[in-house]
Image (tube, rainbow, N blue to C red; front, side):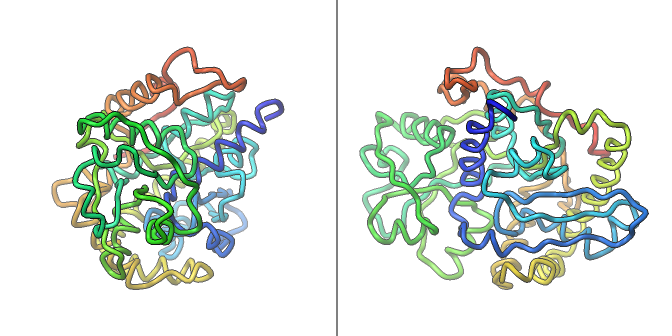
Length: 355
């Protein structure tokens, strides 16, 4: 990326923190690297954003069930790099990376050329929580003057500030750098509240404690869906017709993998644990997480809940990007506020999700 490299790496680290929220960073090094067989088929390299978890279950299911082989494509799953999946895709270390739409917007504002091609989450999955034992915190207004356990993300800061103001507060709070586990940081008293995934860490909280008291950003003045998690590719890579066809094949098989996970959540959880064995995932956590995903309908707009959408809601997305632009989140390579809000029509496409 030349002159944009340092900025991209900075975004990459924040991106990984945002996408994984407080998932244990050390486990990333233990992520599995797998590839489907078949030397005559094109190979797609896919980089995770964080430790393997149920967000990635459709990829592991498609691999284990032979969907990629049937689609005529080999897939190599890569653990996330320190610089982040975004930098790796930009620099062609990986063909596809797991990310968020807003991270793509932030990356491209600094000179990147990523394209968002698949959206997994159709409902907000991030939660902003204090320990339930904190009886002084009843609404986001009570975050005022307290310490936010953060990875230093401007996007997170804007969301939390808006939630506090919407609840009647001033939006003033301190930040503390998250350690390897936000649960531990809160329990130690070094922070008062932090960010979690409802489909993973909230499940972990319900299974093993400590109990959490959580809030959803969209309930407290943050417009749109702030939690679009999905896949991005390099725009220049996508110009090649062979790569376009490989992406179509990959997406077709991946959609089947996620559909299988919704229809067979327990079996899919077992496949995830088995396929990503180096990550030493808690089988009960994976199983309960999948059950929660199905029950909550986080991935689907289907009435019966057995087929994911995979498509980005363009209007909700633009509303959220406009909000972040107003908050000054997006900056160019020199650190100056971006001149205009990132445009979803330029960042994303639904054309590779055939539904």
